[in-house]
Image (cartoon, rainbow, N blue to C red; front, side, top):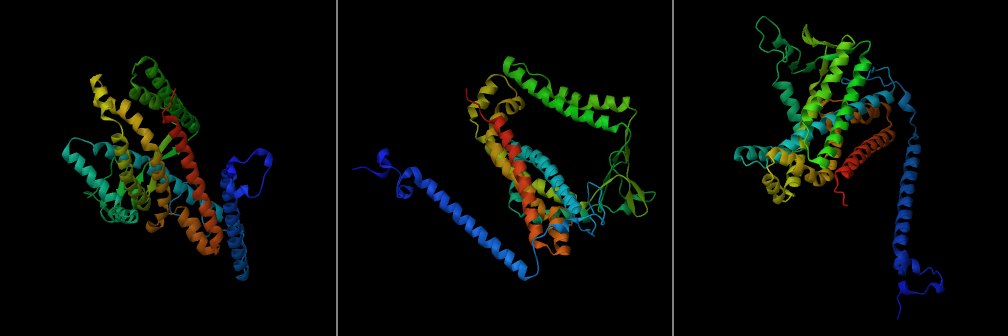
Length: 406
């Protein structure tokens, strides 16, 4: 007796094989599922269009070119209320990307440090890190954002405290940074003639650091020689840029914050809403990254550490050259999810008044134009593109650290 999969080829194709033949059954199920999905999607889209038409609305994105007529308190590029909605959306997107970039960097630093210290043999250090991890990751991130905002607004001194002959507060870093309950004021660059060459030199220095790192790694793998990478990379980072800066006659200067009247003026103003969101998201995500780092290190056999110690490697070099390179293969995949979560959690910025993509396109623009569907679709599309970009970049890095078999 023969089964459907054992039928001779000379019998030809029969429709029953789409169901009973294992060679075609999977394709049949996928085609049916795709057709069902497309029918449901078409039904929902058709009903949406009909309902909007009944309300006198149609799907139109022309509102993006109308005057926005609202201000944005924190912006990276120039913007005024006379600009169109698409520029307000761009400003909000840049604010979101700024928080995402700064948050991922700080969260990674905090998470790596906390994850390594949780494995410390010092009882007090390990318990402090455990308390940090358990307290931050078990309390909703929105509460941490509000808590950081409350601390920055209530605990820091007012600008008035910096006035008088005996002020109760003072500026930091040689009177260049002012930390107040209205925000933090830091020096801002003033770009003069020739400053573009300083920037290009700085970018080339970063490229040089990357190239030297690749060279040092190849040399280490080939000969076993360990170059003083840290000091060489530090020199590449500073020396070329500083030389070009002075040779061109200092084209980049700084504008320092000064107390004038009841507030500071000049310099770069980082509002407490931005700082609270950045710090809260960083410490919250850092607690999850700490557990990822800890689990990645514990996934490496203790024999690796013992073998490194037997060869005379110091604990720091053992961690950098033996443990972490292997642990990265375990750490990177879940780390991608944490970066994506941090980026999406930045949409909670509305709680503290930080004007990100959710607050501009999904908030003020949506309310003033009445284009709910269009704003939601655009916002979902933008978040999807940003998330796919982050995921793709991290996946490329993940492939570079994967174990390559011979």
